[in-house]
Image (cartoon, rainbow, N blue to C red):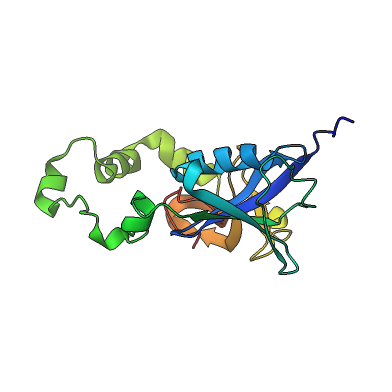
Length: 199
């Protein structure tokens, strides 16, 4: 009997990382072997050293030990979590705390060197403020754009960005004068992307 390939969204976590992969797309007819292979590639671990568990939203934990069984066999449902346990003592994730970004040397530039750059954001804004067309555009857009739409957005609610790919939590709804007129929504993305924490 063929098992239908029903899409399912599962979160994923790892024993040696704080990185949580939200709403990863699988199919209920996928074997545990296939799920392990996919998550091993996403986390950069060797699948031979990986065991996985299913953590249900009710708190039940099931070891997914039979690689020939499917997600449907283990009764996985949307928004359950697959927990990856890396048992390789030589794994990069096990040996090194890659979540600790304090050890990463950050690029720094002095104010003097930054001022010498011709193509900086500071110079772009300065030139833009002198542009008569830009000034006219700002004057025409003084109305309270998107105010009604902003009233429909709830803080801490889940959302999907317009690209249809990135998801996150709404952390801010309101005005940001430095970004322009109207109402803005700040989103804390599930994955380490973007340029702020949504606030």
